[in-house]
Image: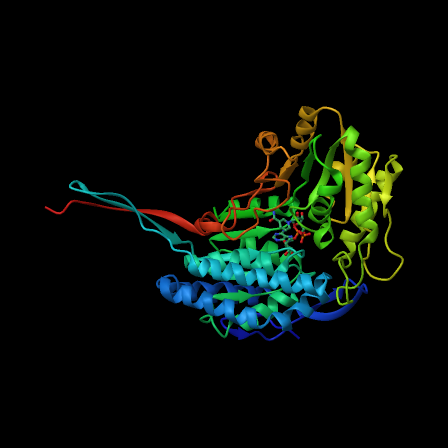
Length: 468
Ligand code: NAD
């Protein structure tokens, strides 16, 4: 069994919970269930490690390089574990872990300039960024490794120590990551614990962490913010989205369909920034629906371990039930499934890639985050009205505009309320060097780039008068 790692060592298992293989719907492994004492131990150990870890920038950068090498060498071993617990095809599991390596290297290489505001005859004023202390990192089940690394790499680079808790649906690869990285990190710098949702809540009220870095649903994000408020812990929240793609009237449906399709269906739509609703002009609507539906029908959905699988199952039963309900609700309201529309007839949480037409705003699957392989395509007559409807959502994570006229697309993009907006592609801005974060209900603060690292620091101003 994969174990929790605290202070560089495996922790004796006090209790366990089941981890289910989404391709069968059956439990296939157990994970340790962290006790409150073990949580205290993790937090105190991280606080102790912080005393020395925060001091030496060079050691930290070398350690992150070592972590990148160790993780890269382990991709072949970790990818099957990620597929088993998450469901995604093996090649996607491999590229997810390879992405985490890129993030480690990016932060290892990131130079933090000294910011000297004044250095003249009157005196010297400088701004430094101090690490906060212990960071509690809480992650969801869609990209367990990537999203953990978006927190671990910048938090450690800035000089913090970390206690990370993965989702109870996907704890194993993160536990394995914790075991692996002990070879290259000083004890206590990275601690990995696992448990059910109440463990996350306990982390947010624990007195030790100075920051909660959270990725997950908006509902839980609100609870995290409320729990952190009492102690004024810093928070970064990466939350849900209902990301619109607006197709302009001069776009060519066949030409854009591949990119649009995969922007919506990658990882089975279980991507915070997936395209979740498409607005298409009336005269292109039927052609676009058919182009997307043709792709949906031809995608190979199978267990992540099956040769040639392009999409796996949904990750867990509640998510499978939610997607099933949202599509059934849309069909009851008069929507038509141009492709899919129902689960696959086999064990596990498999759902047919679904393209919905004949529906509009006010239907649950348009207004809410579906987080699954079902895409509504909505016809519009007036572009200004489509922009208005795209922005009418309380979410604001990402958005895209599709047109060969880049100036016009850029003007529409500038109207959209989202943390990232792309033209003729969706989600191109997800890179280690660009800030990622949501507007409105989609989050608070950003991850990635120097901006993400700054979120793991407090500013300190150092001043002195000129020497006589
Ligand atoms: P979730 O909110 O149910 O759980 C996320 C994590 O929070 C899990 O580790 C869970 O155990 C923990 N948790 C549960 N209750 C808690 C509490 N009261 N206090 C602290 N932690 C608690 O989310 P999920 O279903 O795992 O993930 C799906 C959601 O995540 C979607 O809404 C998706 O859009 C969002 N997401 C956002 C981003 C982003 O970067 N914006 C990225 C990926 C996923």
